[in-house]
Length: 103
Figure 1 (cartoon, rainbow, N blue to C red):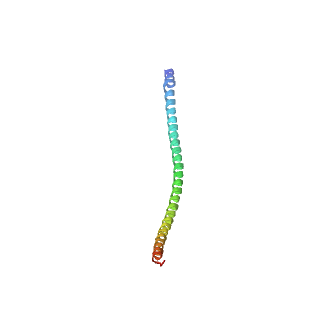
Figure 2: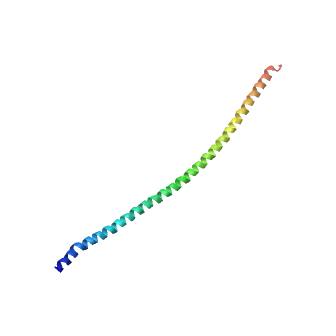
Figure 3: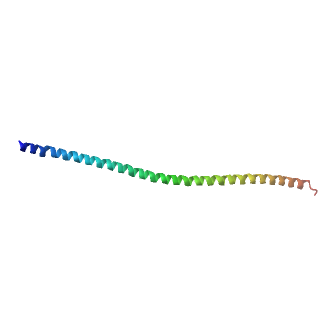
């Protein structure tokens, strides 16, 4: 009888115990692998996010500079339009003087 209990233990309980221990160890490893994979993904996304923020900041600075330049150009165009209008008036006055001057 004692031999059958020992056989039962060696035939059934040892493989079951080994299987449970292996499953628990494998489960923990799978969970750790999943966490490492998620952390790697977070690191990649964080790096990409930093790069995008730097790009966005650079583009924003360029937009601000271009808007300033555009404002300066608009002011210059307005000034040139006024000067052009004055010159047109002056040309008309000179033409009138030429046509009215005695020959």
